[in-house]
Amino acid sequence: MFFKNKLFRKDIEPRCFYCLYASKLDEQNMICKKRGIVNQISKCRSFKYDPLCRIPPKPAVLRLNFKDSDFLLEENDEN
Image 1 (cartoon, rainbow, N blue to C red):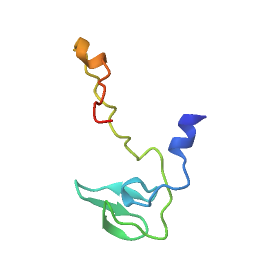
Image 2: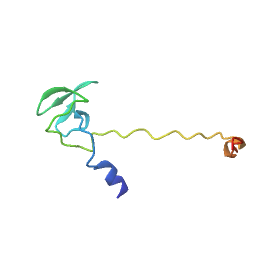
Image 3: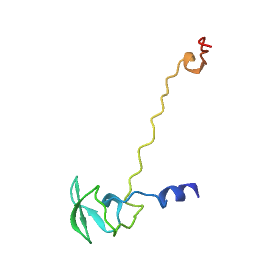
């Protein structure tokens, strides 16, 4: 359920890069069935979200080499 909500949100900002009507042409341009050749960050009223086109951000890299000092809380003497 949580995963579905992230993919199919109503507040997705329209971009040709993940529109149903656009296909990738080169690194910066898309070919749109409605408007022809457009920039990837363009948008129009015909935007229809296609979740399969959207590339999610890469997950954070976890650090594996910790020191004991990483797990200590420091007290502030400013009070």
